[in-house]
Image (cartoon, rainbow, N blue to C red; front, side):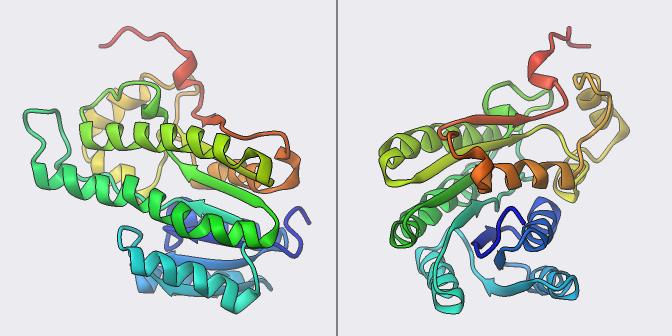
Amino acid sequence: MRLRDKVALITGAGGGIGRETATLFAREGAAIIAVDIDDAGGDATVAEVVAGGGRASYVHADVSVADDCQKMIAAAEGTYGKLDVLFNNAGISHAEDDDAINTSEAVWDLTMQVNVKGVFLGCKYGIPALQRAGGGSIINTASFVAVLGAATPQLAYTASKGAVLSMTRELALIHARENIRVNALCPGPLRTELLMKYLDTDEKKNRRLVHIPMGRFGEAHEIAKAALYLASEESSFVTGSTFLVDGGITAAYVTPE
């Protein structure tokens, strides 16, 4: 097992990438702290882990709230004695996110609160726990749009993921001598509920698909496998990376239609 005796905290664990990662990490030996604001989804993730013979606990926490982030880290250490892996995965993509002219200030602020401040707070309170454990791995979910403009306007989301990428690099440098690795996992377009709600017409879906050399959306379980690599000792010399799992989209040159 690649995560035997490890403790992993996963935000946004109530579905999508978070749930797939929780169940995979558990199969690989990790105890899971599943964090979300969706209690039904979080409980379902825990039930799935337990049904598979794993260990998991659910914590309701809003990652944009400092007290909640402190609570989730305390739950990991209080329940399982330590924290080895912190997967700052929670994020939003607002349906009304658009270009600079049409994106409201409220949508901008909400996106930054969850996608950027949420990662900051996770690291603020999670890094001391990793230090107490003697090191560990932090995985921050960014996106391919952190390095490549999106085909459909989503300015707040794109800017927030760029911030996650730069934050990841700096934290990796700060903590490199402490046996703490910090990497940004950058998925390409995925067939998840989050993206499909945003790409709510065939026209929007096709505009995105035409840019993906593999010709399909990625799956959440494929991102979970990439997260497993970054969480495990197999990536022991990997830190500060922009880990792209994107079906080739950032390698391609495609003339816009």
